Length: 256
Image (cartoon, rainbow, N blue to C red; front, side, top):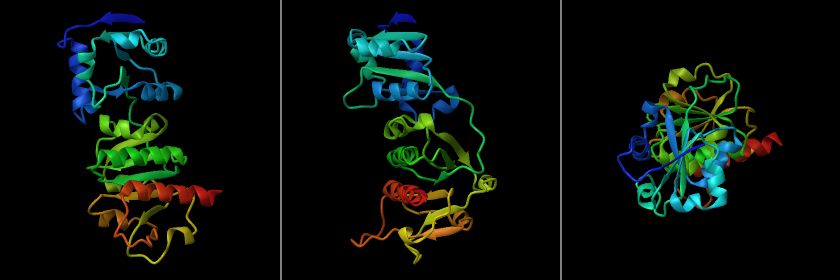
């Protein structure tokens, strides 16, 4: 590992990383992503990812566990806490972060259990759904164009490491879902079929729609099944991330 002690905020690597940390779609230009914190770095390493670069504070370099994490990269930048704070999206900045090179976009797997994200806007919702997908064994997430950037720093933080075990494909048009051979399933408040009383196809692709407008008519027309989530408390609708977790759990429960 090559270790460099950096004190200038104009260091080219730090300039690049600040853009990655600040701009949701910057990774599409650089082909790399910034992750912050030892939890995310460990999650990446456990899934076989290796950082191209690690940045850690001078204090972190004195922590044996964090210093050992830094050795997973060929290059480490040791910086004062103030410089690290400029990279951070957290109120209490972590002491370590990493730049990961993203692989080429994978090909869509027609037979895989999937989640389809239809123009979801909130990064927290998107990350939470990715986390639920990973938890319930759904390994493919397909994002329709207009969905929040899947590798943006906020989505990555909300995903809590789920990204590193998922097949992620974004920027899709609805027509590009045509190769899927698994049936599409959506939730709707206009159906009498309750989620827990319907025999769900397995595998299937759960379609989660825009927070305000729901699933588009074009995409809904492709769905083989619509189900409703009972809400005896009388609320109009559930948060989309909560709905996704319920649906994915029910799919897993029915599979036994």
